[in-house]
Structures are given as structure tokens and as C-alpha cells.
Image (spheres, helix red, strand yellow):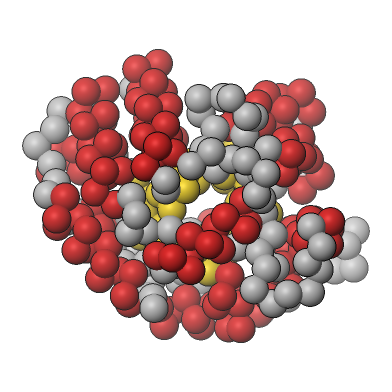
Length: 292
């Protein structure tokens, strides 16, 4: 699926309506390659990745290749990531490249050109970004994404314990809001602008193209941090469902009335069922059904 005139948020909403709100991460770490009987090299990486795409395209809303597991194999691994993105596009499934890039100025534009510019072989349908050099530093990536009909997912409230020291910190310059709340407000403003420009400023089912990454197991953290997830009006990518302890119940506890914005991500629980394509599809179907 190429990024055309339709905004990413609209395309993602359509995929969720068609297949449910499950995203499966493609995380070919060494232990998983070994478990599948594959070598920990670019050849094994390619076999793993293309099997996942072939098995799951059409049955999940999105696939999320983790860039680090490709980069660790050097240029050959990057070539496999490019092939994986192309295979997903050809199969009609959205891809979110989990690269967590963040920088400033021309360097941020360089990342934007790599992961979001039309014609780049590394450009999926969206990319994950880190805002901790200031949300404004992401402008080159966000502008590039929106111009190409692509999306971004900005780290907001992650489930790793270390994240709280930054994400829950209170700002001296933004009326004492938490850092996470400031990030969410900035995303909300961009989505409101995008949806208004598209002539749909008020429809409750609309999704903007600037999403947030919110952990599936953070409990009351969003409310405690003053984060208005409903008001973001963008997709909420929620990793941690399945083997990492997240469930439909824990996700609902995090998001409350923002459930319609959820794209829940599972990696280990689904991928651990492989390498059989039938077993992968069955595991994904169980995960998707649990979120229905």
C-alpha cells in the first residue's frame, strides 16, 4: 500500500475497521531466529521477515518492523528492512517502522527523508519518533510525513521504569504540566489542524496522523500525568500486549474513553508461535479476538 493522497490516520482507521486493532511487531532478535531454525545473519533475517509478512498480511491492521534488529546486520540488514517494507506494501498491509528517531534541524530532516519521504526505500506508512530534544524538533519529520500521506508515532508514556523520570517530570515553562501532557497537547494541536483542513474537524471516529506511543501496562499513569488521550484524536500505538503482560483489560484501564484510537501491538506472543504460517495466523487471530 503506497502512501497516496489519503492521510495515514484515515488509512489506519480503515485498516482497524477491516481487521481489528492488532499490530504485530517484527522483532527478529537472535533468540527468535534460532527458535525458528534460522541463522543469525541477513539470510535468516530475510526469511523470517518475509514469512511474517506473507502469513499476516490481510489479518492484522499493521506490521511494525523494529529497525534495530535489521541495523545490527549492517548494510545487508538494512537491505532486508527495505525488502520487508516493500513486501508489506505489495501485500496491502500498513507498516510502522519502529526506529525511534529524534534529532534537530538538518539531521532530523535527514531522518525524515530516510523514513518518510516519498520514494525512499525505508519509508513505511509511519515511523516512531522520540521527542526528548523538544517536540518542536520533530517538525521536519512531521511536515514530511503529512505531506506524503504518512504518519508518526511520538513516544509519550512508555512502560519501561526509566521512562517515568522524564515523561512524568513537570515543566517549569508549560504551566507545570508533565512532559507527557505537553507532548500529547502538541500532537492534539497538529491533529486538529489536519482534520480541520480535511473538512472533518468534529467527527468522533476521525483519526489524525500524529499518534502517540503509550505502554499497554502503565495503568493510571496517563491520568496521573494529566494526559488527555481522547483529546489527541490520533492513534495510540500500545506495545506490550501478550507476553509482556498487556491485555485488553490493561489497555482499557490505560486509555478509558480513548479505546477507539487504540492500535495494540504484540510481538513475542505472536512471533513465538512460528515458523508455521498457519500457527502465526492462529496466534494473531487469538490476539486480535482478545481486543475485539
